[in-house]
Length: 105
Image (cartoon, one colour):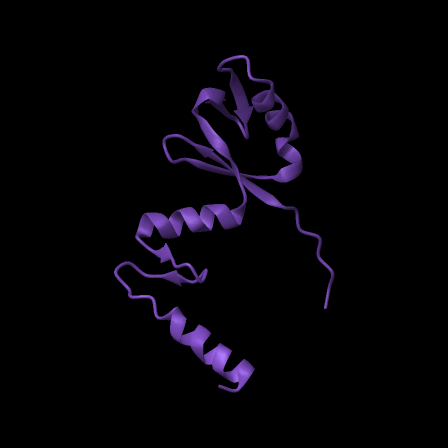
């Protein structure tokens, strides 16, 4: 087994749906520009020029995965489980079973 060091990827999500994935350490300057405000500016990201006014945000892979699921029509119930579109949530059955096993009822 080898110990591999991986860099944390983040997604720069553009208003038109374009996703630009970069290592977190490459985004420091962009974060400073976005936090500074001052209207729209064009910045270069990997050879592409982007208007800062069109940047929706910088998101984690988990947030982007949730976005994809929502676009697909999936939904998350109050128990935190994902369900496909039009699927009925039966997670309460799992909770009931766990409660019964835990308390012997």
